[in-house]
Length: 120
Length: 115
Image (cartoon, rainbow over all chains, first blue to last red; front, side, top):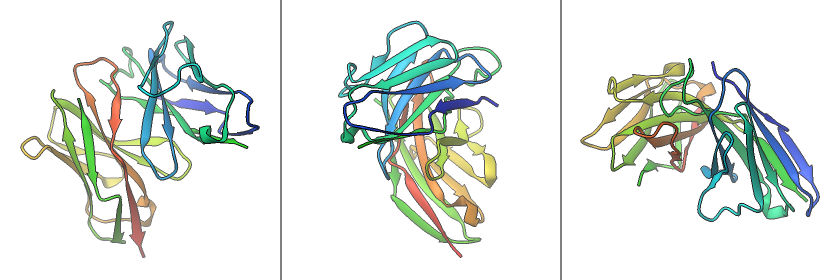
């Protein structure tokens, strides 16, 4: 099946530093990738949608200058949390979707295992 | 606009009992509907999806869900609960007319299984 990986699986950083999270589609080309944030015992909240080679579309209330998203290739998207603060601590999950090929199941997103970010 | 409502943030059943997790959706266009499961500190795994074929959808791990347009519901069921079913379950909806549209998640239902 379609596999999506995230790296790192967990990260602890000091307040004020920047953290980069990678999301990779391992066996298919992801034309669209999504980034979600999940607080403890809550649902997933979509942060942004990125299409390969174009700027990400951010959801209302998400600071685009704080959460930098790059989707430079069909297998890799990165989320950089800039100048992280304790309130940015959360579980970040990416998903990938393909517009064509053998994994083209309409509107199906394949989820990564998530990255736990803790900002001290 | 699309949305899903999951009734009951926490459901507890005995091992071997019927599992019923409720989901109602709202959509201005015919929807695609999904159920996902999430184990602690892990990503989401797709249990099943409705994409306008059969209204009764069978998924993995013995789960199934029935799309009922008249009730705008997509409840998840399993005849006999196992201890390994304990997890968080999310119902979700997306727009079928968009090639790679957003998925809107419900608030989730935590399923506990009593021995």
